[in-house]
Length: 452
Image 1 (spheres, rainbow, N blue to C red):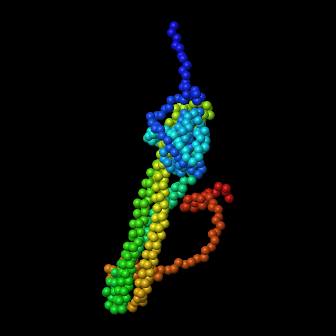
Image 2 (image 1 turned 180 degrees about the vertical axis):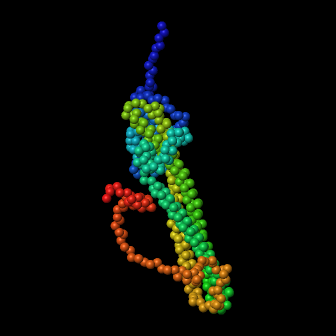
Image 3 (image 1 turned 30 degrees about the horizontal axis):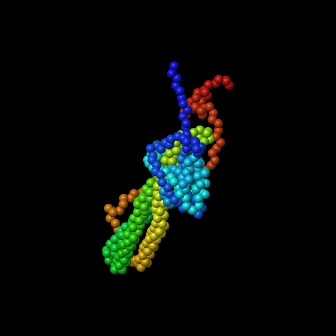
């Protein structure tokens, strides 16, 4: 009978046996490619190069860059990025070493250090999975929630600490509200002054027509002068409106162009911000997964095969952070310029409005001060207040005869008001119907039921 035989295969080569290193699974690069290279970096005054590393023995065969500091030598050089594998430090291989040992190797080198690396060529589109998209949606929803509400709903999220941009956005919304109120109030004020100018014009025409028809010379001159003063106030009012009207245009430019443009930039910034926070949350979840498997002392496939999925997310997070930082700086610059324009423009517009109002009121005061024509003497004919019956309104009135007849009516005699007498109890006869009680009483009186 045929029986299958199994032979134990050696799981380590001679070199690995020589270095006493464990055997690792084949690396699963997920379709990504790597290229080798080296870079020489000059350390800063703190003897650091500005990176944090992860992976390494005993769980991961690769030791890679996790994060790059913004102001460090690595960030200034721009060669190394998140997810790149470190292979050697000053020619000494880091294969089989832990991240703590590699960190000590880098720290022991003074001045300049040469790092050999395997550059990871990752496609950011490959890292933007459905999970990242759902996390973006969740961050967008949680953005308008309070922390207590989000915690009660069990929504995990990443937040930016000490985000000064939030206060800037609140100031922008408050300034927009102030500008809208100022624009609406200015429109109402200008409309009221326009109607006032129309009233001045009507007054001037009426008094001028009276002055033209007035036969007396002094009265005619007084009415004409008074009417002309109202016409002059109307002219000054039109000049005032033309001076203040550009204020509405400037306020409209701020509300309809500057603020929407800034909001569009903020919208783009918010989209990149949510994407960056989604990658941060994804990295945190993958870290927690690794810690969980380490606590259970169980192997994790992606870690044992080079942790390329994690390194891809690290690279995507770094790219998202670069875009986020760029848009954030653009938003801060626009908000700063908008705030400066708000301060300067608000002072200029209010100065223009108040100075124009003061100048217009002073002109009207001077005009009316010079137009002191009252009292006016008029020669009125005797027929001035005689009106025809057609022009008089129809009113109801009583003739004198009717009034005399009403006076002949006798007066009502007043009597003293006395308290009401105590009502007596009604007998049975009173309870009968009217006219029926007397008849019943007479009938009963004719009956002698008891005798004498």
